[in-house]
Image 1 (tube, rainbow, N blue to C red):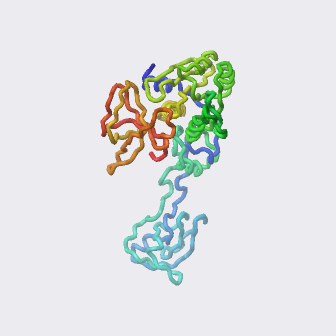
Image 2: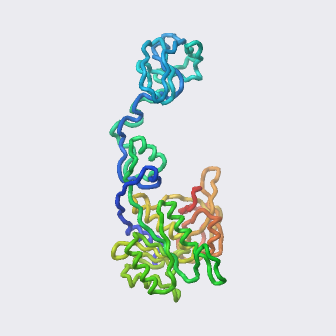
Image 3: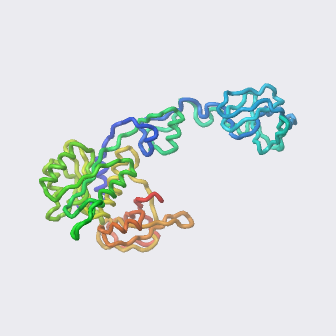
Length: 401
């Protein structure tokens, strides 16, 4: 067996280098940008009015003038208008191009308009106020979003602004999630007394969907020849195979043998951790990565969060881990010399510290216990007691963090 740290290093060492693909802007959220987004013109592209009100030439106000005849009205989207007489004003709306000849905007709340004249009611007017000047945010040709950025709503807005309906992004791997075991029936079936419904594939498929991957699913019966034949087909079709079950020491755990028959290189099998000890990881001759996870639901789910997700992030060129840490809210006792991925819920203290509350279940088969937790807490091997107040790495699997 190897340590969790050693397993992590091996998994990350075998990241992939994805291709660059085109993606419509409305489908690009969460993808990794593979091109720089450059300003195609100044941001903003003109002196933009930032408040509804009147535009004046400041010199008139500075000279003591407070009443300004309205010369014109300008809405957002109108071509630029001109203030022809500096003793007059232009009514102007938020987002409009500042009228030529004007240099200051006074908001409607600070004026009274009557009989075609605007009377300024305040004395604290500053030249240039309420104007978002041309090129203040970015100059034409400047880098706005560098490649390698994970695309959020903010980047979508920039892409639209610079006229990019199609974006170049890194391709996501083609993944299949495979369950194994004769005790499993489909979710739509009524299981017999000795059977259970397939849940791992749906749980893992949902996780991958959160990360942008639409994974296929399949099921293998407990027959080595059948497994070998079906896995062989998958090795020709997918970039990644995620397998749940069939990797332990049971008489019908045929996955390692089937993969060996197919010439898949075993990179490790078994990690000094709980849950997820029987985890198997390997690589085929044509470069397919195989994550063969234990069949227990908590084990397969934890390994997907702790190993597959960092592998995916590293393959896409971003930091493998979101370095989130929290503080134990109570003492934790764990005797085996293993890395312990403890389920926990979280609250925040008055000072903003994440407080981790252990959620005790009934082992790695207790899938219902995951409903009460929101994170795994990574407690390092070699200790028996983890005292309240100590800080450890957190692996979140809910959005609340």
